[in-house]
Image (cartoon, rainbow, N blue to C red; front, side, top):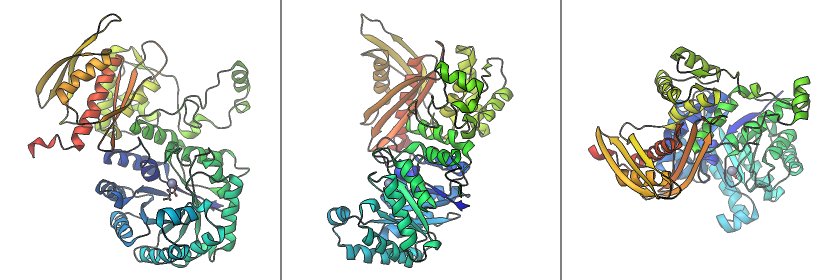
Length: 514
Ligand code: KIV
Ligand code: ZN
């Protein structure tokens, strides 16, 4: 069996894409989910890009024990020094350095000749290899590079100590046939190829990232670079859940390969990432979308009832989706709640469990019974990743709105902070706008853009919970706030206050005592 390494770059290529930035706590939560999934390498960030990135790479390097932790670096001494400084504490640190090799990138971006790129590759791989043996070299825009020049660059990188050679399809341009041929060519033409992992890193601009990665594996690649939910620059990267389940579901084609991945942890990892970036999967998203396992049409339902495999090629259980349609209510105790949470695949700390149980009780007072989807929403709203309810931040005390279709909406909001109550009244274009304006008067958020406001119902039924996500950007950072309630105005207010609290915290507004 060929062991295929899974290199996850959700925290680097995924996180650097617009609307997907995460704070330290959120990144650590994602890293934990990746460790649980048993990926081989976590690319934790690009250490030199900012002090915040350095800190998160370094913290993840200290936290993660069961995977290699990598930092990206350009082919320069300063980048490599910083990457090493950030990852050296890891159980298995990796430096991932890159330089572009396509004519376009060399001439217009790097302003370097091919000979200079070759020379820089040799010198910088050698420089990085003084720090550790686990060196990955990427030839950026490999799929648009001259094949003979690319082979020369790869040979030089291997000779100077690169153990992994990554051949990115940086702009999502290649096709499966080309990707397979490229890897086959390298396996044949690179000296000591048997001592090197060839890696694919595909972008999804033409919707072929997963297919291209799989073709690379058939051509001899032993590492796939991918992200949870396919996050990443532009149209994203290869989606981890899709590429893994494709290999898992077609052992006839991928007969000689295996990975370490625990597929039953896929759903939770996917949910965590969507939750952090304030999005929901498109309903038809393969593997994790709401409809991925739903059989609606009569013909399909009939077939599935007669024999599951008529229309089902993989099971929801294989990716960790469990559902037994049990409901919990106001008489359910903490123990029953905990058992249900565990059955759904979540292990919570005692503090998280208590927070979830508190919210569960509050919601049970409003809605008679809560099903799996409601409980999952509670977990997502109260686990570490969501970083809700900052102790120093504002909290909702009470609110009142008046709205009709023939008057301007008005809202009064009372918030508490440091034991003090603040009240404000505002008019608005609808009840949500009026409530947000009243909150602005009290909390005075720093300058920001309001990027996204979504309400989803957690389950069927008119008494469903409203799950509100709000995303705002200030100082180039994204802030997500979430709220859950049977009352959508309350859920919106909670989400808005949480996003503002996060924003204020980053801006140092809560450090008034210092
Ligand atoms: O897409 C790309 O080329 C990259 C490299 C930096 C590996 O992300
Ligand atoms: Zn990339």
